[in-house]
Length: 84
Image (cartoon, rainbow, N blue to C red; front, side, top):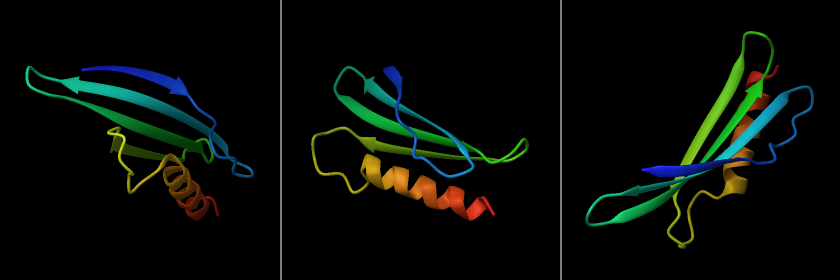
């Protein structure tokens, strides 16, 4: 397995510090290889509470049911529910 992680723009949420990373993971054995994309989003609500979401999808060139924008939208909604 090998991978490359990069910092990406995190969704803006008022009053919350957010971070985002994108990782391409290549998993291979003697017979086949697959590339996965992982989106990690983190929000610091305060000193003791964080929200983290991780989305993994196969990077196979096909239309995925969960896109990067969908993942970011779910992260924002989850964070807003926790940030009262």
